[in-house]
Amino acid sequence: MEKNLKITILTALMAAFTCIATMILKIPTPTLGYIHLGDGLILLSGFVLGPAAGALAAGIGSMFADIFSGYLSFAPATFIIKALTAGIAGLLFHSIKARAKSPRVRSAAVIISGLIGEAIMVIGYFLYEAGVAAFASGGLNAAAIAAGAASSAAGVPFNIVQGFTGILISLLLLPILQKVPDIRVQMQN
Image (cartoon, rainbow, N blue to C red; front, side, top):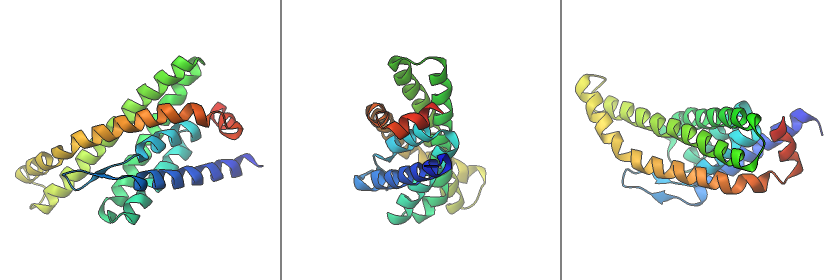
């Protein structure tokens, strides 16, 4: 099969799996959001597909999960935040992995790149929610921004839990996925 076609198919599959993983198990939070398993697939998208295709798969899959789950107002921000998460995590993962081939280095690459990618997710949602809350409470003046930041800070611990869960899931699933010949070849490119 042509290389570009394989990448397109893998990207579409990872987008679908990301959407499903995000929607299949939702743990509601007091901040009206939810913790989900999708961040594991978001990281895996970046690790397996590389930064560009991984960002596209993660952004599209996560955006559709928001749309299908009734979080339409978050969909554009989710696309950007999750694409950045996967893209930067994928870029760091492949950069670290290229330096050494041992399984320990691969695990360290997953953890390090996952932590940085998930930090982007936590900061991205904090900024988006703070901006929306500030705008809703009267505009972008200092008092509204402070109120927005205070209200969106409540979601940070839940996003951190979600991020750590995503790193753990990617640590567990990556060795399994690497046994699939097409994925192994894709990750070596």
